[in-house]
Image (cartoon, rainbow, N blue to C red):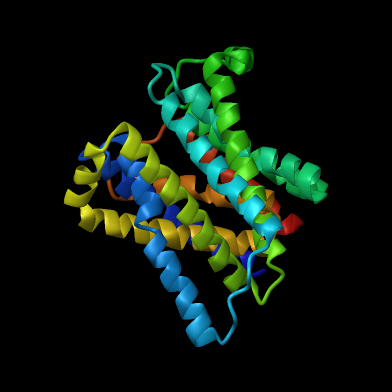
Length: 301
């Protein structure tokens, strides 16, 4: 088994854990604060990862150049933009379709990788991406009374376009992070991923801090009162991102993100076995398609 596969599976599990804790934080602070926690409380852990690699791995920290800084900035702000649009969808009554289209991130990442990095994805991998994307889209609309005809007709609806834009920004961010990590040129994939993570989280923390200072200074107090769960969220988020960045240094971003759709399976496993919730036939079909996509992806790779 190639190393990027278990790293991606671990990153997806940690991201699922981070998302669960972020949902809890939204009950005690605003969306902006819960989003900031992911970056601001993750940065110290990213610095710790980098220090540990330098101190115990015996590798020098690579110096960033202009190309690295450009790509990491594109990734950092692309991720913020994608998150903003995704959260914006939740303010609409009918947000499921938009959320479904935001899940096209792996397919869009494959396109952006071809355009910006000249990376080609094989037919088998493209088929795997399409299967897994269809699976998560099914899950996203599982509780809607909507036919396939209406689903297709809704492509040009405002929510769908917002979802597509969100997926596009996440896809750009994934490709940009891979380009930034590769631009460092060494000394190894772990150190490259750690440096990329530190710079990305630092930029995102500064941007989000400035935004809250301008728009909602009271959010800082709410974050401070919830520092303990925020600290765990930051650890889970930084660990997940470290995993994503390592995997994307080793493999194309589109393939990593396609395998990362396994996060949905972790979510459903928790729903069924922990919370004893029932899932319907459409959700089951979506899960089966995600598993099928992952199997095809691994075999194609």
